[in-house]
Length: 247
Picture 1 (cartoon, rainbow, N blue to C red):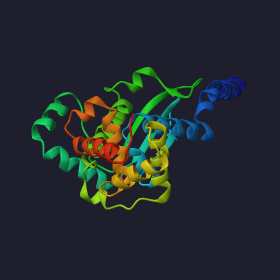
Picture 2 (cartoon, helix red, strand yellow):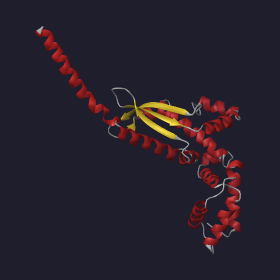
Picture 3 (tube, rainbow, N blue to C red):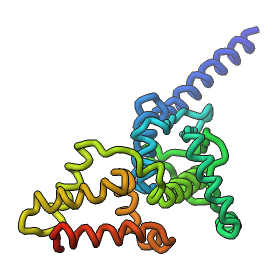
Picture 4 (tube, rainbow, N blue to C red):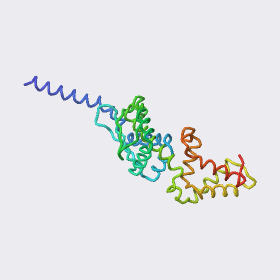
């Protein structure tokens, strides 16, 4: 009887020690840390993915959530909710180019097929960053990042000349932003007047977002090589000449 009591006490003691030994592993998985990790991941995507993604985030059409995985290691689950309309548009664009679809698939690229995409990955407890092997394109997190980037790269390119996008009116702040950028980039006898002419010329054909998309293509050689953005580049040069602007 005494032996049983001693064994019970020993097991209780060891169980307590096991809990104490494991508890520090959960420090990186408390709620503030999860939110910080989610913010970091979203910022990474915003900095890397073409601007149609940032606009969807700004419109509150994309949400991300980071949760702790029930595990004795520092593992999390990243869940990203994407607009179904964006997925449908991207799928239609890809299906319209079978050769491109086959080529991308052969290289391991694909676009999301459903609104909810997720990946589980391990985190470095000290830095709250995904481990190196988790960001490889063969890993779930790497695949998620690549698929969302591919989708919004296609949407950014397709929407540069979309008539539906062009019908969106400009806000006064958007016009002023283009005018300020113009005055910083170009010279003119009357820069304020010339840049007002320039921004109004852009606004007559493109939405403010399309101007942003086209400028992105102009600074991205690969994206511009797809053939998108040519009309914008011609209009941009024509407006510089007609409005009296020079580099």
